[in-house]
Amino acid sequence: MDAHSPSTLFNLTENDRQLLALLQANAREPTASLARKLGVSRSSVQERIQRLEKAGVITGYSVRIDHDRIQPTINCFTMTSCTNKSYTDVMTTLRKIDAVQAVYAVSGESDFIIHLATGTLGELNAELTRINMIKGVAHTASHIVMETKFSRRLSV
Image (cartoon, rainbow, N blue to C red; front, side):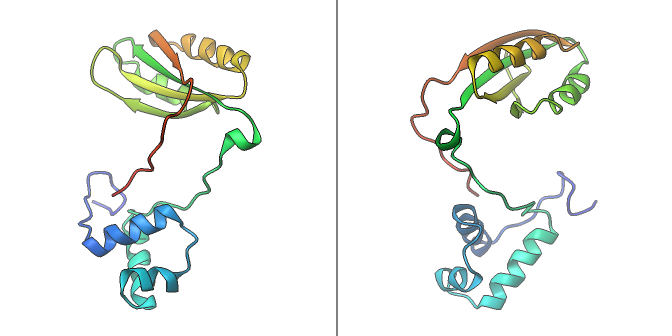
């Protein structure tokens, strides 16, 4: 098994967890500052980051954008049920839709929860229509986010 296989688990140390939490808060924080906060040497932090990257624990770095500051965003969560054995085809099509932010496989009455983000209700309506027309989508129920009360970043 290679290090990037989802079935390969990486054993995190407490220092790894602390480092990952600091990087999630600010991936651009200087290595020297991270080292001071963790009470280890700068080279130790650099080696640890390289080890986590090589193992596939750190898969990349990104910028978090407050879309409401540049354009109002309408977020919608769509509960989606698929016809038997159509999951792969549906997922292939969903990956091509830019408005789809994430797809979660869930238990219960639905197969997936699709997170959509658009700039207008008209765009959202068009994307929901597009999703409902995907071969293999049997049923959807959409829920528009009226307000985000709070949001947490995922932590380790």
